[in-house]
Image 1: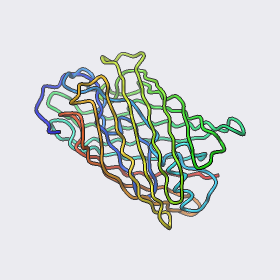
Image 2 (image 1 turned 30 degrees about the vertical axis):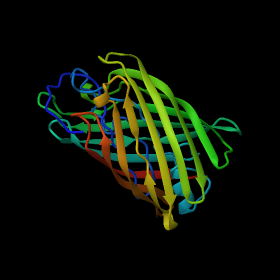
Image 3 (image 1 turned 180 degrees about the horizontal axis):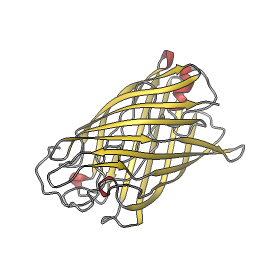
Image 4 (image 1 turned 90 degrees about the horizontal axis):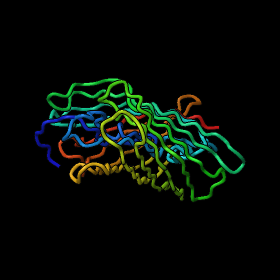
Length: 307
């Protein structure tokens, strides 16, 4: 959608950014997903989404020590393995000033064994955001964004069909009003996937609503992320994992972000430590009018700690 000039006043929004490649799919916050956080008092600026889904590849997996087994585990959002992704997201063409937003997501993933039958996969996303001035009259900002913890309850003994479900939250921890919504949010999250041969295919979805906070606008935001991974020899893989978001409180021109693209990934060992290194790009076929990013790129290094 083409950008037009507008007079910004405050209202929360989200641009969306996603990428994956060189070694594992990843996880994304709404801020990472290309959001221009905050700006909550600027009418004409669509409401920012606050969802932070587990993108395939962040939750690594235990068990297999081979590169392909590690790659498949890294593509499973509810795998039973500790991992620490450091995800750099670059969102290009934001706002009338066509600026580039940078978001570093620090997102440790820690599984907890509840019983012989159940695991709890905890994931906390802590975004560090650099947001240049997107439009005249709106200042730039740098600092911590809204923290997003999620909890997935998943059967410990799964076959080819794997699933997990639980609550997801957003805490208003942003150090600048331009970097967050100023709202406490919560809602359900779920993921289903299957692993067949070299393929890992699934979908993740969540919905959050605001229930308290000092921000000017309520939040009602949905995220759907289909993911398809094809694993190649020597730890390489191809992936597409677009993060599709809907801001239900925005008008139709600003409601959807729909990226199209993908990337390539690889598991690379440094001594005994396996890393999931990825690079990918997405073009936004649909994006919030005037404020949405034109396209996104992500580079991630994910530390894997298989059992």
